[in-house]
Length: 200
Image: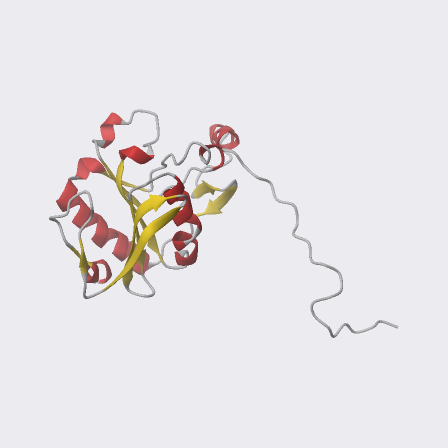
């Protein structure tokens, strides 16, 4: 006669199923064979992360921030969802694609290679469902790369989280700005961004 199990967790230790860890080289092979066609994926710590379809608040915030950056820095310095390199030790298993990057030289100067951390004035992620991931794993990845400034537009909380002073795999300064506040990027201290403008 079957016995009902009423205790949790069960006495058997739960084991994670094995996962395939990917490298950039393997992903390039998949791309050349067409197996990744029409899939929005980025490689983070050996895992292919699905960049989910964007809901309207994400699209709006991305548009508003992009417009401000375009006016402030000039369109030739702005890329959206472009792959970047990170720290040399992280590059084999990581190729993030931030929502927006601000380059320190025009886009057309990058013929085949990804921008390096030293090429980046500002990296921005616009976050709704992915905010926890962007504030932890992505922040550590960008800090290890020495990316000088990293912004997370937190849609749910209507705030902008600014990361600066990368050292030892962490950002020494992490400050959240509310929607009534302003912040100036380190690369252009005279240009103030009103946080509320990201959530119009």
